[in-house]
Length: 174
Ligand SMILES: Cc1cc2nc3c(=O)[nH]c(=O)nc-3n(C[C@H](O)[C@H](O)[C@H](O)COP(=O)(O)O)c2cc1C
Image (cartoon, rainbow, N blue to C red; front, side):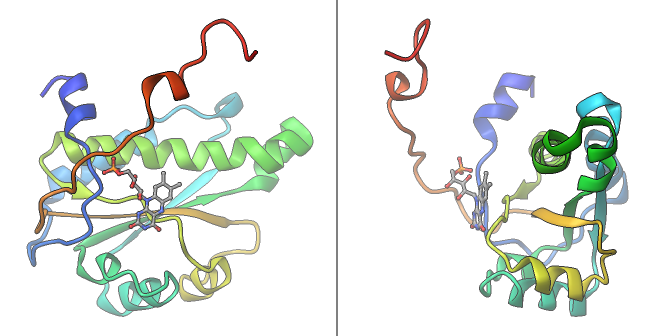
């Protein structure tokens, strides 16, 4: 698949087969996240790889019971480290760049999973405190996204998007 096919193919999948991900595939996904850009190359992020059923159950409970978190063989949890980015960029680093450092890594992992024939869904609806507690995260780490990954057990819904002209603005806002 070339890059544009991957972009077309990527869809949110919320049901996974009871099948493990090959280690080589997981390593490629992690490497994609590892190589994602970051503000000032600070890489103000941590990425946890979750495979144990007990932790998955807790992540599911912390995420309004989203079952995809229990079903997926692997969950990547993306944390921002605002303090690291703040040291160089002040409030903008703390409030924005660290979040972006973490979420762009999630984006790269999301696309890499698709490229490898795997399915995933970005999960953002969760109680931060419960995730921190479940994973014993240090105080300076903020969970910003999770990515359950596995083999799809459902077909994606029909794609829905706003109109092109509602997204792209020529020159400047009127
Ligand atoms: C920041 C963000 C948070 C999201 N949170 C959730 C979530 O908690 N649960 C879920 O099922 N999907 C979640 N999604 C996936 C969106 O629902 C999905 O991307 C959107 O419906 C478009 O569908 P598509 O990804 O198949 O193109 C999230 C996506 C993003 C970017």
